[in-house]
Length: 83
Image 1 (cartoon, rainbow, N blue to C red):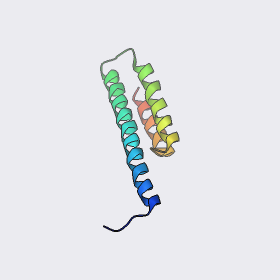
Image 2: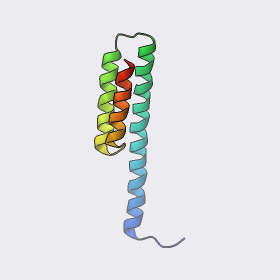
Image 3: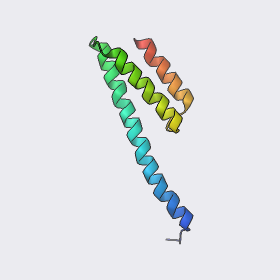
Image 4: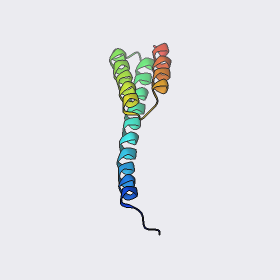
C-alpha cells in the first residue's frame, strides 16, 4: 500500500462520518414517507402533521446537501398530489 498524505487520511475519516450521517438522514426520510403514505391509505387523522414533517425533512436534507433541491421539490410536489 502506498503512503498516503496526511490530508488524504483525514479526508477518508471525514468521508466515513459524512456517509453515515447522510445514510441516516435518507433512512429517516424514507421511514417518514412510508408512514405518510400508510396514513393516506388508512385515512389517519395525523396525515397533515406527517406531511409537514416529511416536507421539513426534505428541506433539511436539501439544505444540508444530502439531496439536490430539485429532487426535494419534485418529491414534495408528488407527495402533495397524493393527498
